[in-house]
Structures are given as C-alpha cells and as structure tokens.
Amino acid sequence: MRISLVSEHADPLAALGGADAGGQNVHVAELASGLTALGHDVVVHTRLASASAPRRVLAPDGYVVERLPAGPAAEVPKDDLLPHVPALGDALRERLRADPPDLVHAHFWMSGLAALRATDGLGIPVVQTFHALGSVKQREQGRADTSPAERIPLERRLCRDADHVVATCRDEVVELERLGQDTDRVTVVPCGVDVDHFAPSPAPRRRRPVLLALGRMVPRKGLDDVVRALARLPLAELLVAGGPPADALDDDPEVRRLRALVHHCGVGDRVRFLGAVDHQQVPALIAHSDVVVTAPWYEPFGIVPLEAMACARPVVGTAVGGLLDSVVPGRTGELVAPRRPDLLAQAIAPLLSDRRRRATYGAAGRRRVLELYTWDRVVDQHAATYRRLLRGPAPFDTVPTSLPPVAQEVTR
Image (cartoon, rainbow, N blue to C red; front, side, top):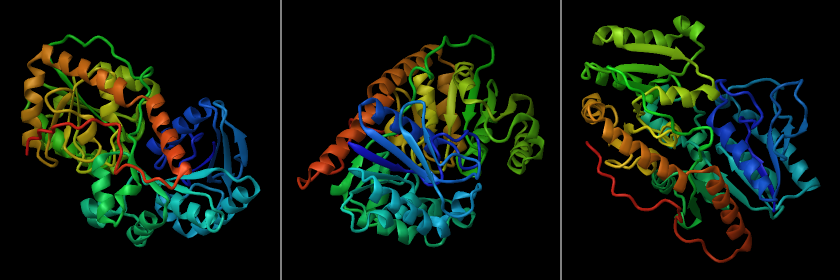
C-alpha cells in the first residue's frame, strides 16, 4: 500500500521534549517505521516549522518525511495552528495529486481537517486518529482548556466525514459516540510501547519503598492527588519525573505550586522532583521504583502505564481513558476513581507491604504488554484496518478491537 500519514504539529523526526513534541511524534514515527518494514510505501506529511529544515527527508527507517509550508516557518503552539490548516490542506492536496496514495491517515483533529480538504474529490479515503478529544478537554479542564472554540464542532464534522476512525481505547469510542460517530466506522487499535527499550530489571531492595510519578507537569495529570496520597503513606518516598530540566525547576510555576503543596502536606523530606528525564534513562528510573503511580483526571490513552508494565512494575492509576484497557485491577495493578487521594493511598498501601504481590503484578503486566501492546502488533492492526477499508464496501465489525474483555473492578 501507498500510505500518507498526516501529522500537522508532530514531526516524527523532531527532538522530543518540547511543549508539543511527545507521544504523538513517537506514535507516528513508530507507525511509519513499522509500516515501511512491512513493505508499504509511507510518506509522513507535517507542517514546516523551521526555515532551515529540509522540505523532504528520508528517515533512517526508510519512510519519507515531507514538510509542507503552512503559516510561518517557525514553531507555533498547536492550539494556535487552526488558521494555518487551510494552507496545509492546499499544500497537501498538491502533493497528493502529484503522487496519490491509497489512503491518508490523519493524526490529531487539525490534521484531519487538512486531510479532508486535500482529498476532496480525489477519491482517496481518509482515516482519522484523534489522539485527544476537545470535548473531553473542555469537560475536564473548563476555562483552563486552551483549544480553539471551533474545535468541538469541527471534531463532529470529522466524525461524520472521515471514512474511518481508529480509536486508541474503548473509552474513546464512548466519547466519539457522543460526538455523533457511527461506531460501524470505528476500530480500536491501542498505542504501543518499545518492549526492548522498556524491559524488566531486578526489583530494588531497601528499607523505604519508592513511588514514581512520571509525565508532564500539568494539573490534569493529578500530581496533587499523588502528593496527598503520600501523606497517608508514611513509609514511602516519591520521585516526580517530568516538566522542565532539573536546573530550571525553581523557575517553573507548576513546580513551585506543587512544592508548596508538598510543604503543606508535611512530606518535604520524602519527595524529590527530578525534572525532565531523557527517554533513554526512563527504564532505569522505572527500575528504581517499586510502584508507578499515574493519577490523571482524564487520559486519552496513557503511555506511562505501558512503560511501567513493560518494565515489570505494578501500576496504581485512575480509572480513566486508556487505563481502563491497559491496567487490569487485581492482576497488573489497581485503579481508583480520579481526584480521590484517599482511595489512591488505600490502593498503594497493600502493594508497598507485599513484595511478592508487586512481583506477581509486574510479571503479569509484562505478559500483557507482550500480548497486546508491542509495536509490531499495533502496526499489524493498522495495516489490517487499512486493507479492510480499501477492500470496501463490506462493513467493518462494530468497534473491532484486539483487547480482550476485562472485568474492571474499580474502587470508587
């Protein structure tokens, strides 16, 4: 197949760590690489974000990245990109007419708008992956949501006009239905994790157990609740990884706010802020922990639980988004209702006192990742979805998914 992946703000070759460079960049890069390895011809179309960046480059893994002019050739926050989407769609249309693919797979809602504009009248099907939904952001963040006001109506249009939608978890399908999505045109394919990079290491032995909270330093990630839970766990330490580099922590408003909370909760001697951690060092950091805690208010998918499980560490998280699929309560970790530090502490405490249980959960988590979340499997599922779409007009199964049904017993 000839496949165009559109990722307007997430260049797969960009350096990670910027405000808008993270999970989507990795996802698109891994998908492009894996599809290329299967013998498909893959081009990733993204926005030109630097005047010095080459317009067309062959990635080391064999796929092509084409950077299209749309707005200033400079970094623009993704929430400010909507005015430049028409130009991106027009530039993409020129490329698709000159070198037509079999299908276009758009990543993120603005990529989908550009893809629909580019393919209008060309007979090229469009697959959409949202990665995050504005309707969820607005509900959970309220005034703190910086998305354009037009986002939710335009997401409804994408649900109506895209030929097929790939959702990353079953909870997302529920949200898509609320937007009017016909679930006969949805397939659930999860995100993946590099199981060679994230691999088990021996569990540490020490007097005081260590909790790890890993991710972006933003309120919705629920770090407040993790700190408050720690106050109920007097024997544990907490490592917080993410945010700005270590030498810039003192200047970060969110870090200062969290440090004030740490002081207020009386746990200052048991919390350490590490700052940003290089991707290569994350497995070693997970190996240093006993339990990985991830407590977001909402989470479109959540890659940290997969990384922890791949490293054979138990996960205690909140029952939201993709965590409802990835974490199996009583088997690979525990799930509790969001914004409930009391329940979070109740779920963590038994694990901290039971080394054997932690090891059992960790081993089960590793097995689950190997069964369901390797990139090879994720790429195969995308390729199968593309083939079914191109075969048409036979209908898809309703919300087909590789994830087996799980009885989720969640503490609320």
